[in-house]
Image 1 (spheres, rainbow, N blue to C red):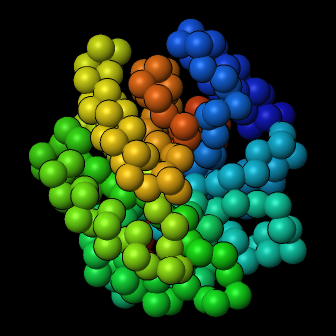
Image 2: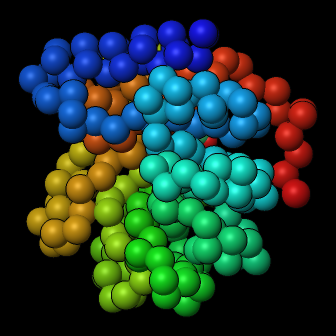
Length: 234
Ligand SMILES: *Cc1c(COP(=O)(O)O)cnc(C)c1O
């Protein structure tokens, strides 16, 4: 089955990249990014042993979480941009939120997290290289936002996430990732809950792992190319 082969290949690449820099492969989590892909594709991935999935669109993600509601071994990450009027669905359904970049959204997620659920795991998104992107904060803005989040009882600050500007050159990829690595280590010194550095996608996962990534978000290498036109955001 193709998806299962793809997952084996990706795991082998993660293991190799980790070995190259003397890290334990167990310290790197594979997040399968299933956005725009049907539940059958997710089922194939589950059969291959995959348990953590990333979604970018609130409505689509919630539908998939509901589809798999009878399983309690899956972990769902929201990794897309979030409009504040959709925060409640993220607070109610997801386990992780990767794209936190505003205190206002943090406050809403904190207020809307159901009391019978564990606190929502959150990552602060850093805009490390792409000046045109509106998502993510600058590193200079990290401390005050981290401080605010750390005071919210229904959120746990787990670390940082970034989507650097696309680069094909390994060394150029590393320039952005190394900045993230040092900001992450700084943050860890202040907040003991911080253990996750979410960076690396299909085309830059090796560089990301060499620079300390603890979670790679992989879509294309697992599920194949996406057809964006088939998936309008609602
Ligand atoms: C789509 C997406 C990915 C997966 O990208 P691939 O290049 O297909 O591996 C990872 N992270 C985020 C935030 C995404 O939106």
